[in-house]
Length: 327
Image (cartoon, rainbow, N blue to C red; front, side, top):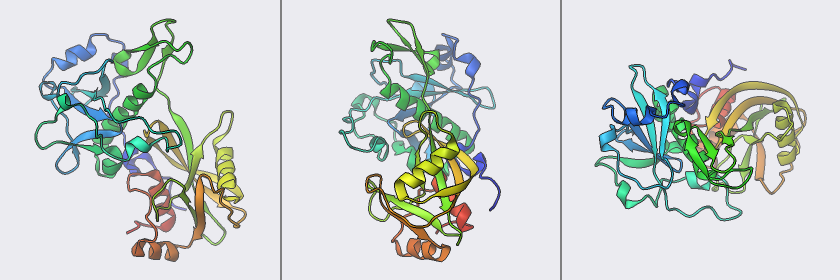
């Protein structure tokens, strides 16, 4: 086993932005930043950000930010740069309908926004790009801005009301909290921990699965959310057993990655299988099988296996086991 996958190895995990947490409670900070020509603004909408040619983030001066109408305060403080400049995100409304009951929870982040209001027309040469598509190409600085913007935007979109009394909430602390207008309770952005694991057997084969809602040919490592009152290691063993019937013994931490689709923290592990008989649950997984390195390489070459995206920790876990890039 090679060294632990550190954050710098994972595109969306790269640090690079001072989050300026102490400035969030300054009620005039965002207004002052918008009056500063050095400030740069990232437009965000439903898992996508605005980019320019070459898959680079388009960071606009305040004067070039399109006018958007929203019933909420759409400004988010992302942080400060090395030269002291402020970075903000502007939430852009999307008129796309909500997912239907039974659809995957992250269905809205697989494509660029399609219902953005006409008033938010972009300057020439810019366009919307899903963060999933460009995550592997971002610099550390860009990844820090984009993941924060997408995560905060998703939280605001999904939590407009107080979970205690159902009343409306207002945005506070430069987009980092919401406060109930009735009972005054404060609510903070959610992060849902999920385990993701490269399960390897005694013959050094890796276990990959095909989820029910994925397109044909797509395979990846197993993953699942951590339940209330559960340790990470137990979650690994439980998820593997529930989805495939395979029993897991040793579990070793490998790295983590924020995955704001909409609010996950993916915590990666290498897990040692103590059994190899596979029986899929038929609900989350429709197929699962063991791959040797030669088998996986051949399947990827022929197109029978579409590996995880380059921006994902799943890809990093598979390639760590594989010993190099999957071409």
